[in-house]
View 1: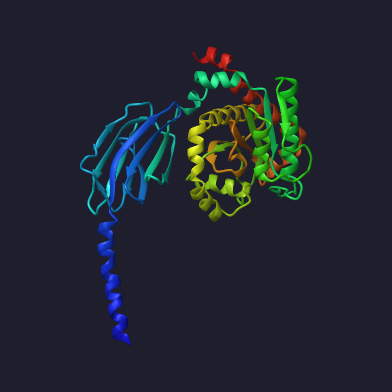
View 2: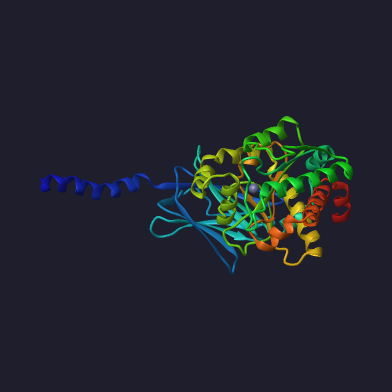
Length: 380
Ligand SMILES: [Zn+2]
């Protein structure tokens, strides 16, 4: 009996050697697109590839080591880019069948990397650090669209049986965000003459997918989802604004998992499954506009609140896969106005004044975003 077991074992030991050679990935080439906010690099390969990623300084660069890989002889090893974000793309064959792809950086804030199939490729989006300035410059198509902004959907998170996050003194996210949303709606209506539609205007449960469906069916021009943040770390505090995109940021995945009411593991799985969304995003071209809206709102909130309150932390604009934003056909953002799990911020959120100031600041941010003529004058 022992002998018969031994034979198959040997076979198993040999097999990986053969299969490895036949599974070798060929790097077929590189493509890139420059836009005002980021440069997208695509590595074309002929089958699924595993890789590691890293950043090095002097000179500033990102590199990706693709394992079990060969650089095709036809592939140009150096591709000059020369835009605001990247100097060039270069690749080399290392030992152990590793291909290293290096992106030489001109400017850098953050990057996202993901893979797509049919055909297989690795997509790397590199964001430059001047993204905040660039958000204030709108191209002519966006400007045209902005002139038509008449209707905004405001989405106060949670409601009804879903309280959202609950603070240490039992303040509920669903109540906080409803109050902020109502105040925001009032300002947009009265001061800016914008029609406002609420996904809910009372304490009622609305499923996530229905919220964007409302925005789409009413042909809204913007979609703004309002939430309060929570963390197990009671010290965590600050303001952040999200737009819909794939992310590899652990904290962003955690926030999205909580808002999507799924586990972090499920969230990671969902990200992989929903890669189709990325193609839709690219086609619809709402990502850049959503990001611009996010920056305008985030900066406005941080600026306004810092004037009246101490320790207002700017957690910045981030991206993650929020179900509530999936399928929105208009620029859409999700705002985490403060941490309800933080004692001081919960106390502030409980009061009317802080909530009003948040609403005013969001309205100001929306107005900045929708006032291209003023911006054009200021930044020409
Ligand atoms: Zn929420």
